[in-house]
Amino acid sequence: MKLFAVALLLFAIGFANVARGLDDPGRAYRGPALNNGSYSDLLALSGDRYLHGDHPIPYIDDRIEYPVILGFVIWLPSWTPGGQTAYLIVSALLLAACLLWCLASLRRIPGSNPWLLAATPALALFGLLNWDLIGIAFMLAAVAGGSGAWLGLGIATKLFPIAAVPGFLRVAKARWFVVGAIVVIVVNVPIAIAAYDNWAWFFKFSSKRRPDFAIWNAAHITSIGLINAASLAALAAAGLVALRYGRTPRAARLGTAFVIAVWMTINKVGSPQYALWVFAAAAMVGAPWSIFGALVAASMFDFSLELWLMPHHALVLRPLVEVMVLFR
Image 1 (cartoon, rainbow, N blue to C red):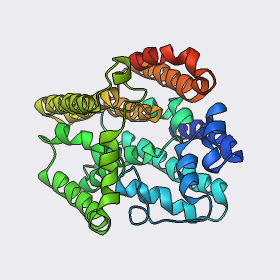
Image 2 (image 1 turned 180 degrees about the vertical axis):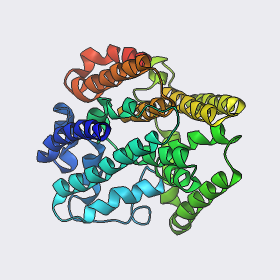
Image 3 (image 1 turned 30 degrees about the vertical axis):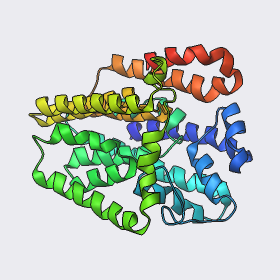
Image 4 (image 1 turned 180 degrees about the horizontal axis):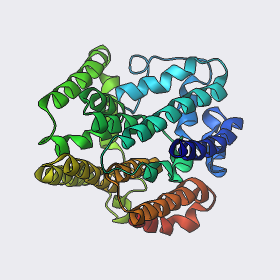
């Protein structure tokens, strides 16, 4: 019970911080929320779309830069009476449930250390920054229970759970991958048929997006084509390493953690909440506490610079971004 209590306490601290931004909802939300360190995509993206009472159906009536399941997760709470406050509460309850699910799954994984996720300040800093805890919950449930359905749902929610595929190719049953693929197809194909351009926007948006708070900025590489190719090559190399050494379930989990770490390192956009994926990966394989300490330091550096100090002192602190990225 202590495990769950500590995690929920940290998450609640994050909720209290994000709730401070409810005074400035809608399109004017971003500036004030960034200025007081309470910014959340939950309020920013939902405010853009639903604050004025509209409920455009994801992908059918609305172009969303996320995979299909997450598009509907963003949309559904907008029907809750009570405006942005109700939207935040409902979304927070969902994410809190996913956090508890993450910890329950970690307790079922041999060699894991759930405290590496439950005790990280990143839950307070980033638990409500975006919807990543949903994808993480699906991924950990897939690893813990060998469920291809959970893996497929995770991929259709945040894509990152696909990192588990190369590591488990040699140890998981073929049914795991077949079921996962079927789930991805069943979720995506109807939407792709009904509104292909809006469905494909996630891929187009991702491919054209410029690097932001990423290793590529620190390396002063600006060519999007080169960055896309280099990122894909690095990720493919990590996948081959995971495949090469994934001869046992333990090795498969280590390979998955390695792919996640590489992915978050070379990702074109260094969103701070991606730290949650790395903490989850560390917890999954029972990483040393020294690694946990380094991750805590990096994630707090991210938050203090990206989401607190930069909005006030961007020009002065800009050189520190490269330091932050390299440290991360």
